[in-house]
Length: 308
Image 1: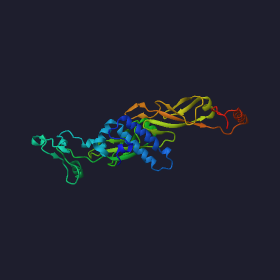
Image 2 (image 1 turned 45 degrees about the vertical axis):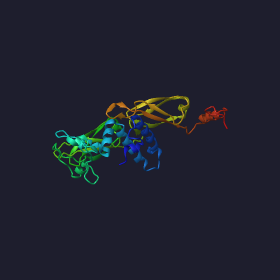
Image 3 (image 1 turned 90 degrees about the vertical axis):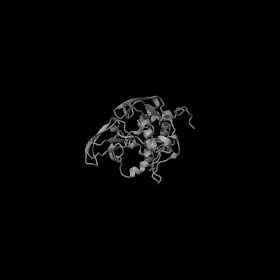
Image 4 (image 1 turned 30 degrees about the vertical axis):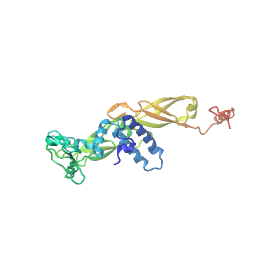
C-alpha cells in the first residue's frame, strides 16, 4: 500500500494546513469528472480521500505514524492491562534495562535473525499468550455495505450477516467517508471482530469532497443577465440563491452550512458549492426573436464590446 504522505505529496512533518491544501489541490486535479476516459482517476481520487481521512485526524495520524498500514489495529499492539510493558527493551538503541546494560555498555537490536522484528516473529506464530495471559487476536475481517449519500448525511443502520453466522443491526454514523469503517466488537464466545466497510453510492446530482458538496444549477439567460432568484436543491430541502446582474456562466457560489454532516460533529455541516449553468433559450417566438434582433442591431454587444 502506498504511503499516505507520498499520496498527498507532503513530508511527514507537514502541518494540518499543508495537508489540507495538498488534498484540495489533488482532489481537484484527479476528480473523475475532470478526467473523462481515465479509468484510473476514480481509484486515484479514492486513494487521495483515504490518505486525507487519516492524516487530517490527529489521533489516526499518530497511529499511522507509529504502525503504518496496520494503524487501524493499533489496539492489538498497545500494551494490555494485566502484564508488564517490555516494549522499551526491544528497539534499536541503548539497552534500557537495569544494571550495567542500563549504563550504556553497548547497543542492542532485537531481531529474529532474518531481518524481522520480534512482533513479526510472534505474529507468524498465529498468536502468542503474553504475561498478561491474552493471546494476539487476528485482524478484524471487512464486511462490505453500500449506503446512499443521504444516509451518509443523516446516519443510518444496516442489518448485516457476519461471516461467523451472526446477524446484527449496525449503526453507521453521520458524516462517514466513502471507504470508512465501523468496528463491530466481539459479542459472542468466538471472540470474532469485524469492520463494516462502507461504500457510498454515486449521487446523480452531488459530488462530495470531505464534508463539502458540489452541484450545478441551471439558470435562464434572462435571470443571469438581469439578476434574479433561483432555487438550489440540497440533500435535505432546497434553498434560494439570489443572483447578481450579469452573472457569468460557470460562476460558483458557496452556500454555507448546506453540505454534508461532519463525522463526530453531525450538528456541524460542510458547504454546498453551486456552479451556474446558463441555459440559452430555444423555440423562440417571433416577439422574442425580434427582441434579440433589436439587441444585436443596437450598436454594441452585451459586455459593452463593439461588434467586430
